[in-house]
Structure formats: C-alpha cells, structure tokens
Length: 264
Ligand code: FBP
Image (cartoon, protein in one colour):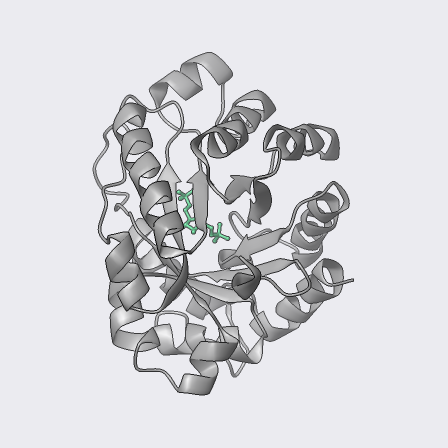
C-alpha cells in the first residue's frame, strides 16, 4: 500500500473515463482549457500531468497501461505508480449497471500495476456477480502482494427506488462497509454532500481506507477544494480525481491546491 501513498496520503489521477464516458469528456475539457498544458484526449498528456503534478499514482485501464505506461521512462514509472482498473463499461446501453472484467490481476501485475481497482455497483440487480468477482480479485491481489481499491458506487433501479439518489448517505455508507466486509484495502467513494454524513461513511469503512471519488467538475475550483478539505478533516486518506483536474483551465495549479490540503 505504501507504494501508492506519500506520507500515508493518496493523490490519484483518475483517467479511466475514455471507457466510462467516451472521448466527448476530453473534448469538452479541451474546449474549456486555455492553459498551454491541456489536451486530455491524449493519454500522454495525462501521464505527463501525473508526473509533473507529483501524483502518488495514476489510474488507467489495461490498454493505456500497455500502450503508454509500459513504454514510459523508467524514472517516470517509478515516480508515478500505476493502478489498473480491472473492469469497465461504456455509458451507451441503458441496462442495470454491470461492469465486466477486462483485465486479470496477473495481467495487471505483468503491466507493472502497484494496485488494482474494481467497480462494484452496490444495489444493482447484478451486484451478486460483481461481488463474487470482487472476492476473487481480493484473493488474487493479496496473493500477488498488491492492494485492492473498490470503486464502491451505489447504482441501479433499486438504489433509486429505496434511497432516492446514489449519493444518499445511507447507501454510500453501506457501499463503504461492503468494501470492508469483502476485504478491500481502499474504497473510492463519492461525496455525500456534507461533513457529518461523510464522517459516518469513513467510520463505516473501518480499517479500509477511504479516498474521495472526485466527481463532475464543479463550476468553481474552490467548491471542489472545499470538499477535499472536508473529507480530509474527517479521516479520508486522499482523493482520486479526474475531471476536476484535467477539465480545469490550469490542471497543474488545481493539483497544487489539492496537494496543499492533502499533504498539509
Ligand atoms: P472523476 O474524478 O472525474 O469523477 O473520476 C472518478 C471516477 O470514478 C472515474 O474513475 C470514473 O471513470 C468515473 O468517475 C465514473 O463516473 P460515473 O460512473 O459516475 O460516470
């Protein structure tokens, strides 16, 4: 776990959106940017950003790990550890949320991963399949000596029916607890909207570390930074951020602001 942390804190640059949201997400980012260092459609741009920004790890799907990370400089690879996201899906089919496995733990290790990530759509009709696969991943990763991060995202018609929205604090805390129960080392969790409820989320996760899942880009960078402050104040280990950095006008500047909070 220490490999993907600095002083016990996590600052991950998330870049699995090409799979989850499609290129349109990066094009919007490009249009919004006016900084010399902004072209998030290009994976190399993200790797350079991760390096220049001093991220403690970068999150990629297997294909990018193979075509970009694996051929990156040895110094850069050492300085920016890799987290491979093992499953993924597009946002095209209108079906109950399910994210199939794309990469195995041995493949991820072969590609140089220091940790692996896996999305569980807690509450989905297909939750049982995802939990079963997740259990196997925890076993494989721990046998290989690397940590597992659960993207614990409540989602699906039952979540909407029973909890109203997927950021309802009760179902988010439930997701955090599931990560602990399954044996994940870290849970990536969306913000519940207020400090009190997020405190309970962190407590629900027990000894499973909690990292904030960045979320959609906020209109003002200060709003995102306030969320980072709030979650760090109640025991989060750090953040996994994507859109609030590489969709911003100045990704390196926002990165520095986040670092001031996380490594304070
Ligand atoms: P962001 O910081 O951009 O929200 O990235 C975090 C993340 O979990 C990504 O890893 C993932 O691609 C995306 O959000 C998924 O978002 P959603 O499933 O809510 O569309």
